[in-house]
Image 1 (cartoon, one colour):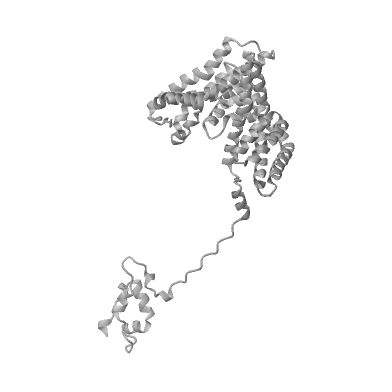
Image 2: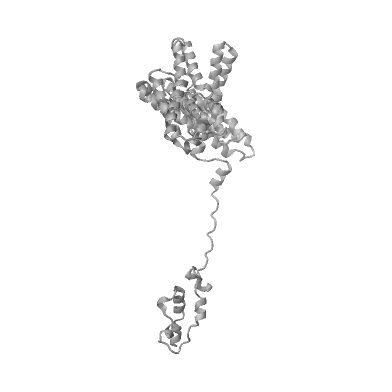
Length: 428
């Protein structure tokens, strides 16, 4: 018997487990039960797990834990399913970026292009251009609402119904009408999408709901929203007149940054009604970004980049900014300097459509807006005739200062290694 004895202080956990499951044999090996059958050492070795295995695997399958039935799937949320089917998405991306950017497009295709045509007609004494400009400007509310509905992926019948909604919100919103149109068009569009094609008389139900909800919201919300936006814009303009150095730099910095980020600088200026000295500072900031990026990236993008950024949009640099934020340092610094100079040294005003304050050199809309303000004020006797000093100020603020300072600062950052080769490269 002694030859079958096992030393347990060197035994594996599986051996101990099997030994205690066969208690009589264990007692026999310790000499306490001499009449018990010995443990078959071959069976004991076979019960051990393989090297690196889990000791629990030695337990017979009859003693393993029972697998629980999976939890029954929850029934789908009916409201979520309905919203998904209607493409109604409550998100910052959908409302603060998509819809807000679309508002700027609607304004550009109505009020801004109308102002440009009107100015051209006044200069050339072409009554047709003047009338066309007035017609385009008069439907700005409808154009904004339809553009917002399109961004929200509204069906055609809802888009057509938003014409009346935008017109009502624009008239009731007063000076801050663009922001009022934004909120109200979103509400009306989502209600219209919710009922679209849900009944057999969709041709009546969808426009009825869209227009009734939209106009009711306009009566209720447009005046306070428009007033709040107008007062905020007036506060910014008043502060700029009071502290032109500080506020000129701040306005130019903020609006210029909005121009290159996933926001709409034009829509911000339109919503706040930013004109006057603050509007001029905004133009200075936007021009600094567009002219600056067009020139400091010329070695990477050549003439195609010069035109697409200088006359198109500096948003083309947004992916590069996210990869290397240091590349925006020159244009941000120049925005602040240019805004401060515009508001103090040059007394640079933008008295055209507020949306032009946030356009910069994109399609030369910023300078055209400044010029249209000169023409309107001169015609109304609010300012003297346009002088060479005015043209010089526009040239310096919109082109020369941004070009010279941006190139100088970018050269320093390139020497420091903060801007590397191809950091400013854009797809063309």
